[in-house]
Length: 530
Image (cartoon, rainbow, N blue to C red; front, side, top):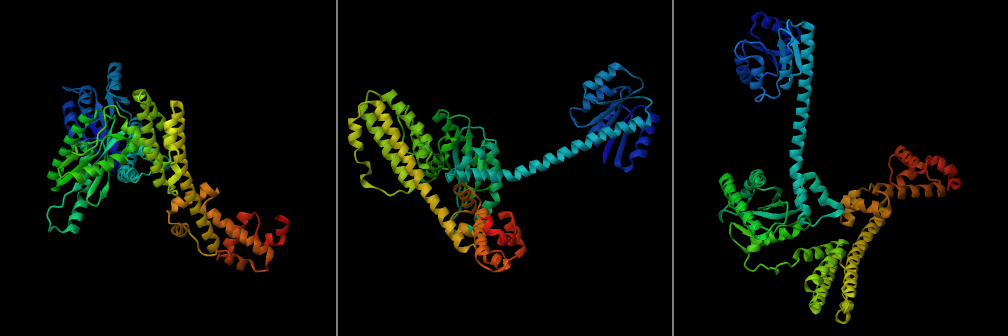
């Protein structure tokens, strides 16, 4: 359906235009008419036409002025301009207003119909694009909470495999490099409150909580986890700590006030420090500590009375990053260690003993992290000679070399332990498949045996064996089938059943795909082929 407005001060012209349009398009169009520029402006507001056929020369307010008034309110309206003569000045003014169709009177029927069809085609195209845009936006709005939840889970679980965090940042359009955690904990109103009903009510409030958090902060919101909602508030820079803290506290208080008014639920909010995106797990732990150690409605971790602090200029973030990178087995730790040592030598280079002590502390801490992450066997004498070596080293170049070597060894211990565990998982999976290949075997079943998720065991097969789970299972079955075809006189149907294929036709097709020939051809020529 197209709504068409006809504006012309000549009654006969209006009647003729309406007749031609209705004759061609019938009930596809709803038509209303007016005989003045003022009437066109008023009708445009009430009727909201898709197409306006506008005479330029009307008494009082002319067509050009009427279009200038209408367009700001109705920018999607399509105008077809009419004029009793071909006036170049009017045409120029119409073009400036964005009018694409200009007809002279008397209007020929064929030209009018063709012009209307062109305009209707553009309208249909716009409607289709708008519909597609709305559908896409609806899908994005549906997917957005899931992406935000995935981002939050990845942070708190320390999952950054294969650049997962970068993928979430790209999908969510996160360009900021810093952030801090906000943990909203709902407060149970009374001791005799029905906890099940309270939790159900809290679930019903979630969308409102998420909406208000987005309104007040540039934030990513996680799911409702028990009585808590986890949010990451994004920052463009790691600003001066005190001013950022005050601003965050005031915004959190505003969020709390609005939540209380909107949903009638009291919340306590814990806030962590602003840190680089990759270190958000630390901010999360701080926000949780702020909730545990303080009963105020809003509490910032750095306001806790027993909160640790560093002397001005101390690179605490660099030290924390070093420990985290070692725990993950990230080889960037070597560069981070070098940066920290360079800072020590630049600021405290004359205090050689203190530099040595801090270097030893960093090494011991990193090895401690590596042990707890990698799961290696602990050896009491493994650090034998560290203290003597540090004391005897007078060249800072040698100290740096020893420091980097120890960090490298810690990383290797993390990787070797993880590699050993990975190889063990693959071997257990292989062994199970080799023992049960005759059964209806699935990736889910094998992942249960190995105690990891199906996607992860599938990834390990690809990395360690160079093939998928299904390719490996097929190889085991087909090699056994080839052996039976060579060494026994069992029927092909029976052999198919023996290796896990109940359908003989499916077995024959799978065998041909694997070996290039049918089972019968292989039995007849197997010895020559092998």
